[in-house]
Amino acid sequence: MEINLIVFALAQSKQCGSEKPHAALLEDIKKHFDIHWVSCKELGKLNRSLFSVVLVASGGTGKVFEQCYEQLPHPVVLLADGDCNSLGAALEMAAWARQRGVQVEILHGGNREVLPRLADMCHCFAVLQGMQQRRVGVIGGTVPWLIASNVDYLLAKRRWGLEYIDIPMERLVCYSGEVAEEDMRPELSYLAMKAEDCCNASPQELLKALRVYKAVKRICEEDRLDSVTLNCPALSEQLQATGCLALSLLNNEGIPAVCDGDLQAVFTLLAAKMLTGRSGLMVTPVSIDCRYNEVQLSYCFANIRRMERFVLQNSMAWPDKISVQGMLPLGEVTMLRCGGECLDEYWAASGKLLENIGFGQAAHSQVKVRLNTPVDSFFKHPLGSHQILLPGDCTEMLDRFLQMNSCRKIG
Image (cartoon, rainbow, N blue to C red; front, side):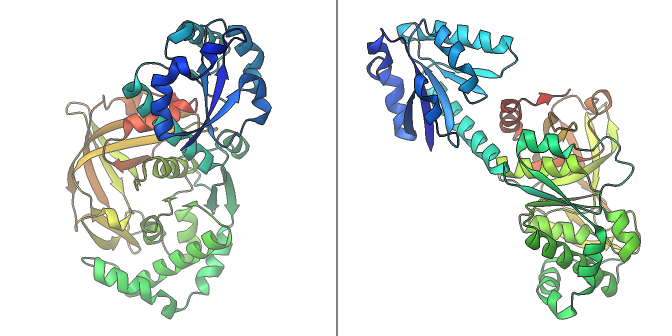
C-alpha cells in the first residue's frame, strides 16, 4: 500500500523534521507502506488518489497547520509519536479542527496500536475511492410505499461519488421478450443441479423468471451497472413475473441487487460488499420480541451460494410466481441499514442467526436472529423497513468505515 506522509515541522527544528527522532515508528511503517514524503509547503504536489497522513514531527506547528488546513485531505489523520513535543501539537491541531466540524483522528502509540489502524484506514479509503465510479441502476423507479427510503441523487454523488441511473421498466419488458429458450439453458441446468425442489410453481413461471434475469443482466452489461434495484410490483404488472430469481442470480454473480426500488438498501448492500467482501441479503422484520431480544426476518431472494439448501417456491406477494426460499447457515451475523437522503446515517448491530423457519412450507423464507444490542432500537430509531443481513460480525469494520466518512450512527 502507498500513502502520503505530510510532514509538519518547525523550520528551526530540522532535527525533529527528519526521520531520525521518529525512526522507531517510521521504520516499521516503511515495512508495510510505500511512503511518499510531502512537505506541508508542497501540498499542491500531493497525489490525492493516495491516503494521506499528517506527520506531526515537532511542537509549535499549530499555526502552520492552520495556514495549510484548507489544502489538507479530509478526514484529517494526525500521526504523533510524542517525540519533539509532537503529541501536544497534534492535540492542539485536532481541537482546532473539531471546533470547525472537521473529522480528525490522532494516531499515537507503538507499532501495535498504529499499524493496524493505519492499514484499516487505508482499506476504508480504498473502498471509498472504489465507489467513485460505481453506477447503480434503478429499474422501474421505487415503489410508492417506501416513503422514507429515497435518496437525493446529487447529494449521494457529492458524498460518495456513485451515480444512480434511472431505467424505464419498458426496456426490461422489451429485452425479456427477446430472450429465447435456448438462451436460458445454462441457468436451467444450474438450477436443476442446485435446487432441492420446485414447489407450487410451473415451468412456464420459471422461464418467465429467467427471462427477467437475462433482461436485467443485459441492462447491467450495456449500462455498465455495478448494482441494481428492481421495482417488482411494476414488473409483475407489466410482465406477469417476479424478479426474485433474477435478483438471486445477480447476487450469486457478485452484483448487489435488491427489490422494491429501495435506493438506500441497494447502497447499503453495495457498500457492505465492497468493504467486507461478504454477500448480504435484503430482509424485512416481521416480528420483534423484546423479551428475548429477537427479531424474525423474511426475504424472497438471496445469494444462492450463501444458502445451505434452497427451493424454488411460490412468491409471498404473488402466489403463482417464483421466489427463492433457502436455509441460511446459523451463527454470527450483522444487520445494517444506511439511511438519509444523502446516505449520512446508519444503524448496525451484530447478533446470532438462531433458526430458519418454515423451509419448504411457507411462501417465503424466514429466519430468527437474536441481537447483541437492544432490539427495541427498531422502534426508537427506525431507518426504514428493509435491512441488510451479512454473515459474521463485521460491525467494527462498518463503524470505522461509515464514521470515517462522517456518517452518524443511529440508536
